[in-house]
Image 1 (spheres, one colour):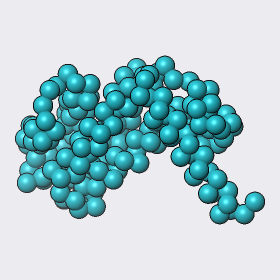
Image 2: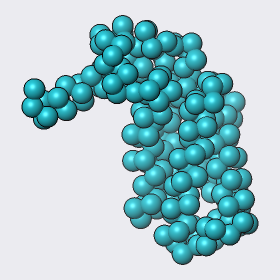
Image 3: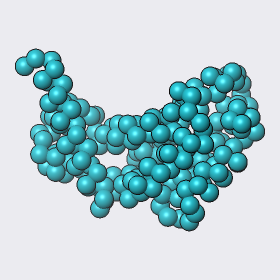
Image 4: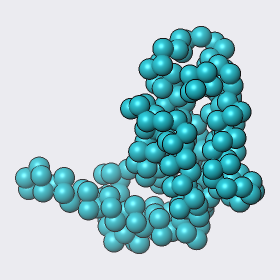
Length: 186
């Protein structure tokens, strides 16, 4: 089979696997979902799943990356920080049930830890582009505070434990950033 056809088949399989994950996450936490359930729902063989993903957490993280980089991650290509964050929160609101069930994972490979790591990378790239010395200990500490605190607050909001409109959450997340970061956003 030519490379282009294999790639097209791979994309179709991934799409079916993702749709299965979305469907299963509407009712279950990620920890409760098995690879067998995903492959059965997707109508693909286990080997097809493992050809594309290491495990269900890798699948969830890949799924998340695809929309996260297009929204908040867009700050590294020059998009406005507030607008990027608000776009991200709009998508979170749309995918609230799925994300609530994904964030409920207690596994070390779960979405929360993945979210923290990619958000740190995005912050560091953004700050480097703005001319910040990201090797500075105080700035790295500020990034840790912003990322871990921001992620926790967003998870609370996604779960419904922080009742407010996304615009207010966006404003609060920005206004409460450590000064070491905030000065690069103004």
